[in-house]
Image 1: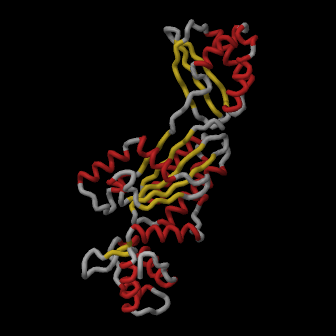
Image 2 (image 1 turned 45 degrees about the vertical axis):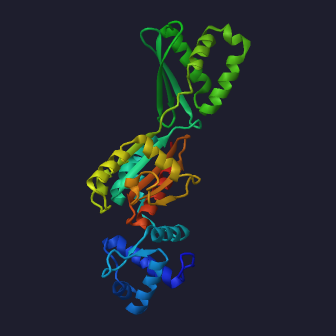
Length: 345
């Protein structure tokens, strides 16, 4: 069987049974084991010949001459493709909903979902709350500080808080700051941030804005980034210790490199952005992460983009060994994303 050959249904069935058995035991799978596990009889010799063909095609490898075979990354990729095209098992999603409903804010639910995914899959959970311009403004707060400084606080309806300290050309009194806050909150409370910026820019361009005491001060604050405070993604990680319990064939040095890589927020965000390019609601699966970091070559990534009520975006994912229960993890990520979307802002 050549590497380009399409697998027969029987060969695919044998391959999937080997993958599942290897996931369960972590041990090489022998032809006799596959033969005994089948409902329909198939001799060990026939299974052995099929396994030899799969080995030649790059789906299996034999660690030792006398041992059984283990699936390669290519085999896991095919296994995942078949799962994505089929029906994933249902999960007790009521538990996800019950626990997430206890949290008031979408950002808090995203953090809790990281814990739930880690606990449910026994792998490493990763979640990130991504602020967007589609968020709805709740209120603006301006606090006078010493030395002509002002603390600008923008709070959105989903509970996201953004803040920045700026230096003013002239000191602003507490009364002036209260007047500016009242103007913004009365005029734009409940508006989408992107719409607030467009409308406010139009108002501030008008001639009378420079003559109005409040608007003239607001022009300076807006120029210093008010309502344009880009909040960084809030990333949550949990369960890195679960990776230690898995045989990733890493030396001590490689294990240290892996943990250092997982501690880098920038690298985690790169991981999420790189493998979650699918539209919101569609699973993204990557088998083997060696392109991200050499120490991650025996890890797999399963995640999903979620658009939440109120404009907040989220990325939720699970990081685990290539030898993971893909059905369970994919179902957990999919159900978690669905639960987050359904809960009110």
